[in-house]
Length: 107
Length: 118
Image (cartoon, rainbow over all chains, first blue to last red):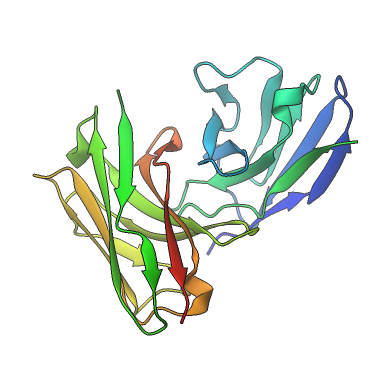
């Protein structure tokens, strides 16, 4: 099974900060990597797929990069609406393993 | 619009059973694999199971294999999760999601809450 590891687990940031979240796969997933945002009490929301393709309607301050086993999600200037938990997910395998999540909280 | 709506959650005693349903609308349901994902209170998302378009392929997480069964009815645009031998550790919000080959898990339902308690 493919394992997905995110870092950090928690990240404290101020509005306007640049934030980078890392996701590592235990084996190559090519670019079959998605990022999701989840707010309390809500379902996850797709932000980025194919490692770097922005989902329709997602602000361009979100950027995804990487391939094979190393991926990043960058928020160029964190806004109040961005404080949430972010998950990466590989979908090279049918089971689509998720990372453990990164909470972006207000400093 | 594209939508998934879960139902069937509730309070159940340890050892009990529950069947969750997820009804799709706004897209050709039979074209997509479907998954169930859950989230225990304060915990991470956990993938549970997937089912292929014609139900030929299914798979389960170790935590539920042998207790949960996924199925689908393409005529009703619905995917199910039969949950047996429930324990307190199965208490969670259960989401169904559409699996897209290019976009990953691109559509999610709002979730249905399952509480296992005596």
